[in-house]
Amino acid sequence: MTNAIAGALLIGALALSPNISWAHETDAEIEQLITNSAHSPADHVALAKYYRGKAADARAAASSHKKMASSYGGVKMAQKTQMAAHCKKIAEQNTATAAEFDALAKLHDEDAKKP
Image (cartoon, rainbow, N blue to C red; front, side, top):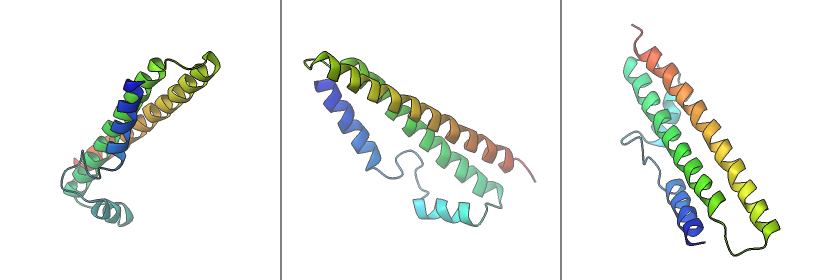
């Protein structure tokens, strides 16, 4: 159960820590680039970096939930099964989200190379 609590705290810390993976671009700056359609290679590089950071965060959340799914102990079997299924589902969703962010980063990497 201690692992589950530690995992939940990690997820909370990631969720409450803006710009953890993408350094100097703020959410407002990224939103501005998205809203105004990035034009320069530097704009696309910034967006690719942002999306790679979001993908990394989603993978970290997936990893945490995978660990939580296997760490439930000391609860009734029906509850353990339900909790493990919940964590497995969230891990799968976060893995899919990471893939989507990776795809967006790849698109912006390609656009950054265009003249």
